[in-house]
Length: 545
Image 1 (tube, helix red, strand yellow):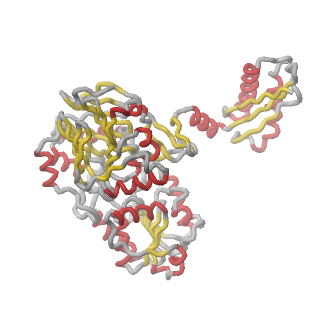
Image 2 (image 1 turned 45 degrees about the vertical axis):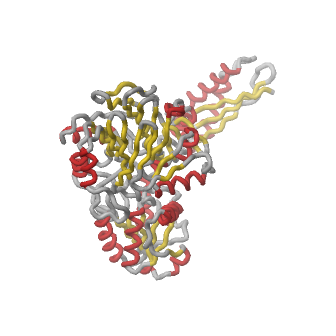
Image 3 (image 1 turned 90 degrees about the horizontal axis):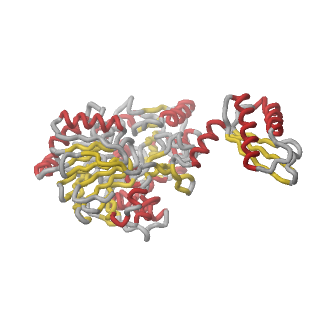
């Protein structure tokens, strides 16, 4: 599909899901991309940590792609850049802090010379073909959260990125209601808006409120205090630095991603007053009441610092009477992993504080009052919900219509939505899917590798070796090995019966190897199903003497 004299919107990620945001705008034969993020794998992808968007639609049209514009530095908005941007061959555009994070990613992958990164000053503007872009600062849980105001021949788009309202932000200066109202006064065709917290009836709250909650919590703690938060939340790091100083605790940082964020934030002019830190060994020598640790791993990540500390495989040690503060939201799907760490901490006698016990976290996404305020300021003709599961987007569409917005279409990844001219409508559907980073290889998320791995993880695997002489007669008994097949104490008897069944389907003088493999495979699998109720993957090796 090539856009004509029209304005098209096409999401290849982030619509119908939270994470992996990739949005395309098309006009006069050209496309621009806003954000290129990833998401994190769940048990449906065994052995995989990262999930990437399938960009085959725009890869086939890369000559018409003008550039990639990044709203902010969270992984679900920039994380896929080191894996996919080089193949697109177009320049990137980002504000200084976000650009710093991207530059580190490109350097780690050896791509600094292959991908052009343009740094745009905060509030700066630039043009790409028929599109004009201006960064509009909004509050979020990372420095330089931005909306992008996109000028097109058919009207202006206000693409929010991730945002919230914060009357007491600790880093940066978000746009004021007056500045946002002025944007609305000039006319906005479409508001493309974050849907994550649409079901929250209250506003998300201020980072200033979290500062007071953390101050009380840390001041009341008796032993060592460890605070875990999202590494990218530099505003929270600023808060924690202030809390450590005010409570007389020396600060220690545990987690490579935290080191990266702190370094990048300082280089971009943030965290200027962040207190000096000590290394792990020095922190352990301090009186327990005099140290505060900031650590990664609040979502239960097995290799992050908190998990290693909880299971006593890290130089930092926590014991009876110490406190761990979870200064982050529990992401749905991570409950089991987080619970495992919290149980380990509880076993060690460590006290835990979450946002259920104290005001130690606020969200970076808008609740209903904030959404309604944005509608009043921007006054778009069209509300286009993104960044949410289908239920979030549908609810925001209802909220927008109830607030007086004329149109609120709900689209999914792959839907081609014409925004103008005329009323917004879905005019087609293009390929959209997921890829997985499996080790160092990028594969289709629902390709043969993942399907085979799912089957093995669910049912187990059996290998069968059958030896034949030159005339096709069986030599000896078939040999079998199992992995993950639930026979255990009956394994010897099961293997004997399965070998007997396999031998019984080998005809004398067999020459058709494929047919023979299939007979053996089915015979062994039937035996396994009879014994276990499972249907394991059966691989057959024929050996001719």
